[in-house]
Amino acid sequence: MATEIRILALDVGEKRIGVAISDPLGLTAQGLGVIKRRDVARDVAALKALVADYAVQEIVVGLPRHLNGRPGTHAALALEVAAALARELGVPVTSWDERLSTREAERLLVAADVSRRKRRRVVDQVAAALILQGYLDRRRRT
Image (cartoon, rainbow, N blue to C red; front, side):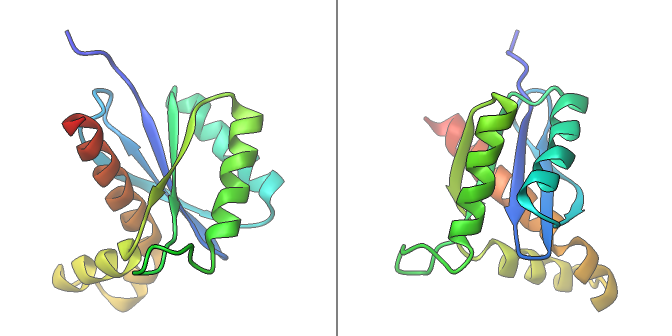
């Protein structure tokens, strides 16, 4: 029987944090929602509740990078949130290259004919799911 593991993924932005969760087997990702950003301490408190509710055993934080691989403009914020989560929650926190995840999420939503208003509300959640699915796929291959 396969081991159950729940992994939470985050797409950290200036205004919102997109959140996704894996299925219990760690095979597929699904969007969980969006948390409105306040400050790192309150963001961590909100995420702590999700970690407890879903019995999360690992957190993946999207790390924005430019196409050349250098850290993007929001990389410092993502790393700050990741460090705070590792300190406060006691679960492993991994950063994961999230290059173009928001653009891909936007493209998928447009292709699905989602209205502009609804896209704005869910794009961060979809980006988090894309980040997590990439991480899960890589994990399975290695």
